[in-house]
Image (cartoon, rainbow, N blue to C red; front, top):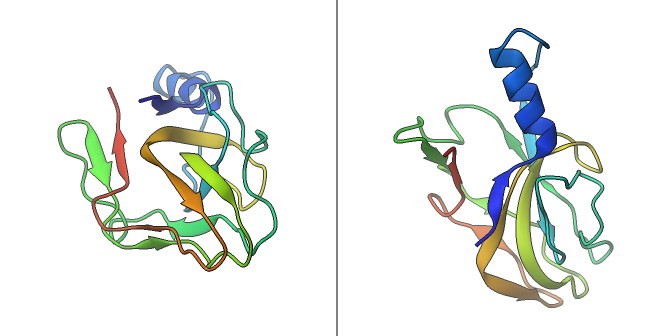
Length: 137
């Protein structure tokens, strides 16, 4: 299963750690879905994100109320991440990503879903607490 941090974020983190650039951590992350493959080179504008059908990225405030304290190099969501109900098909979702903007922007991290999700009209995609894991390895 493919997952990782984007080149954008890796370069910002390395620059921050080694005194090359400053980096302001986003106060809000935007969780998005993709029907196409994401990679380290992907951006928030990478093709394959659903459009129409009431699709929108989900805003998640970046704080300790929404994410567990990191332990063992990992954290996860502590609240539901609920997408709007699809008013039309979004296709088969294979990847999820975290971006720094509600549209386009920079991709921070991504993961391939263990099981693709076919999103039809009237479906709602939900990540339950603990289902959205972020691991730094």
